[in-house]
Amino acid sequence: MPGKGRAALKEARKSAGMTQQAVADKLGISLRHYQQIEYSEVLGAIWIWDALEDLFGVHQRKLRWTQDTNLVRRANPKGRLARQQ
Image (cartoon, rainbow, N blue to C red):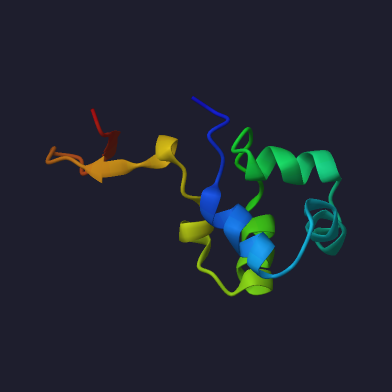
């Protein structure tokens, strides 16, 4: 369910003393688009995650994490990821 948000991204932003508008301006995107990323309504482009990683000094895997993306590897012949039940 989207909307749970990306707590690590929000925490990194606040630790940097930045508002959502300041981050959006730094990235050259709209405030609404940044909010959609932080609220996990959209994933966001790879270049945005690269820029956020550089801006906050936190690995983008941590920044992207949400409850909804908690994936676990299950043993299967093709080695695909599956959602944890």
